[in-house]
Image (tube, rainbow, N blue to C red; front, side):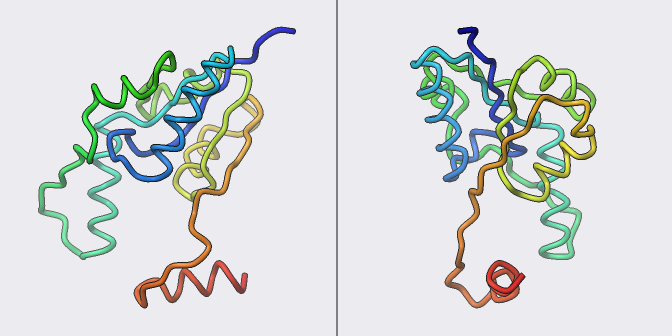
Length: 153
């Protein structure tokens, strides 16, 4: 049986160190250990910095501020955790070309991640599998609208 090349795609840099980032790192390493050619594809620092600045603008209504995108993990630590898997950083321009080198794309079910894939065009990409990595309930009052959307829509 021919081994499939798998791309695990997410927008944030793996150095952010959140739950989805750690899951993608572990999944890529484990799939590689089982003989599947698996890589994590994220957007590059330039794209992510602009995205973080846009989020800051939407949240705080301020633009002129330096946004630290370094995250909680060092790049060396991430690469060590990946084992035999690779971390590939894509620009907006070369994302489609990079993803087309794979047989299957696994992505988070988040608007920005799927929005980027939609921008490229799903019909131009290999099959996309979408995993849900968003909490079902947020305990803080600030997320009341999000809780409403998750449970009632």
